[in-house]
Image (cartoon, rainbow, N blue to C red; front, side, top):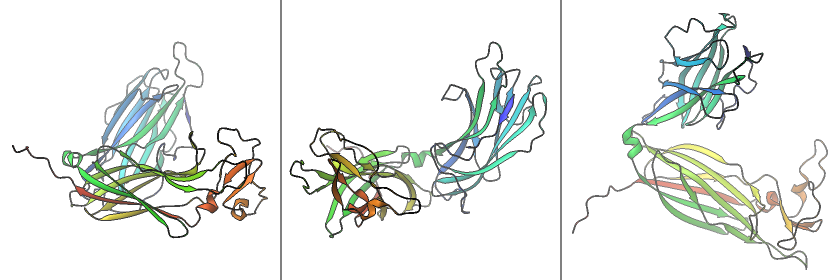
Length: 367
């Protein structure tokens, strides 16, 4: 049974990886990090077995994986118990909490082969320090049977760690009213402002969706239909009460821009962003949504027709700048109408404003 070196061992599936600056591990957040070690067999996406433990500073959580003659004969249990006598492979997994900041947890993860092919493991432990958020998972180790074993269809198993954040009951129950404003300003100073209100808590990612902000686009060709540009802002919001009276917000935003058509717009989608911030109740916080540095959206001159031709706009020799940067905001190319999003929205400003307050508890109705 061979151990595979994972090139992606430091790639978090669903989140970012990196070191964190030192800060208090709890910070009065009312949240308890928990690590779940997972055994995933080849051809499966859900774990066959899981073992977990709370993460506390100075108190690592650990698990032990064992395998017999094949990867169909495996077990996964807590550390501290002696491995099976017939185990040919024994791997110890350890997770140690180092720090917490803005909803991300710095964790040291270690994978150590205590036994390999029936003999004591000779490799040093493999260690990585990563930053994980609630729900993030990361591959720790991968094991493979070098030859097929009769009666066993499993040739590879992956050992993973997943971070989960458990909320104290008082935190999970705390309900907030969130006011959100979608503010957009163009290069002339004209401003659009939309407002919505939602109930949020610390257990559910509450989705929000604003109306599209639209811009009439000029007619450049006599045979062209009239088109409209748009900006769309969507996302989710969580609000968790802290024991110190502050509120932790988990905000994800996705901004889309392009040409608005009766069918699904072919426009350019902005990169999704996730942000963790701590605010005071009734305090308004602004989140800047950056404009696209480059890009374009194109459509046939007549709605419903297909675009003829394909390819990139302009040639870009090695070391040269973006050719779109010197082109107009809108233009005709190969019989298609093109919205040059990087130039059109260059001097626009987009913000999401958020203000949360504690929801009033509903009492019994009076006759």
